[in-house]
Length: 95
Image (cartoon, rainbow, N blue to C red):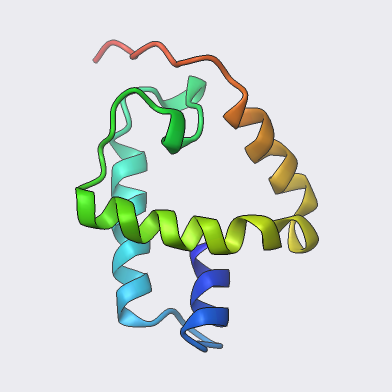
């Protein structure tokens, strides 16, 4: 979704711009450390917000743009995302 956002909004065709690459790297790190892992719902419904406030705003902007467009490019992934969003609040995994 970040790639779609960067391609359309920042007009990057081959690789992500530095801002979007930073956002992508940050998001992957946050997902790697997520305490909910397998039972995870979408981040917007998660009880634990692990993104810094500035990054949360940036990812929200990218998701709002790319989300509706995802249906046409990746319909199966869109369905998985919808199902994830309908999951109940996850239970934190023990560490």
